[in-house]
Image 1 (spheres, helix red, strand yellow):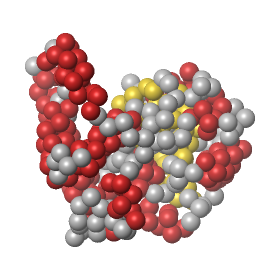
Image 2 (cartoon, helix red, strand yellow):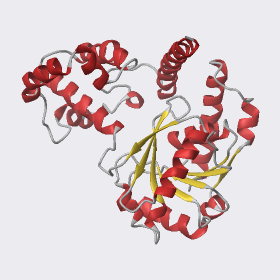
Image 3 (cartoon, one colour):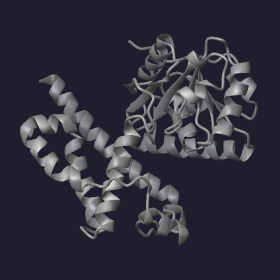
Length: 319
């Protein structure tokens, strides 16, 4: 059985940092949330409290929320926060200068054997490894939002990352009830974001070409493609229909798919108009709810899907 770290230091008190603290603390790991602003730490306390209330209401906690809260502390002092830790996960802005400063502080203060992990979704792990004297200690540990609901974590090996560090990271991830995907080549976007952005690029292409509306594309993905892929993946789908059939379909369709190298007008026009998403009241859709309400609505849907999947797996295991 995998063993969780005894302590994790999480640098960055935003949405991901708060979610990571919850996931580790609910599985017996003491967590320290580190940020450079007290207001960010205060926001994290509120975010964590709301998320724990949600998980309790969904009957998804095996531990009392109070005990989880007590396992999480907060500090503005990075050096003190990483002292004595087994695992550091930075989840600060996707800015190389900021990440360099974080890694330089961490490597000077953390134990020599601590795993130095990044939750980056886009910066190569090999490049982050250049910020420290021992690049073999740096590993990608990319969680999907929200960390306390989505079960997969990408463990990314940079060119210099040691096998021992990769193995320990996998052990820590499994120890807090998460399922690692091992990314063996350090490529932009890793696995999840490459798939997500490939789908998004084609969805925007379909809308821009006047093939279907935003609403119908949403339905095609959410209520069609995603519903099926929640049960089986793309390669198994091809196997069920026949690899030869899928090859023929792919040869007919591939030449017509988007090859855009930039996000394009679907994004740029909305950004220029200030239509940047839920917080602005409008993005690809219009919203009359707050960002917190929209996130709660999403999380309720994800939790319902998880419960249904777990019930299915339990029946399969009994049979």
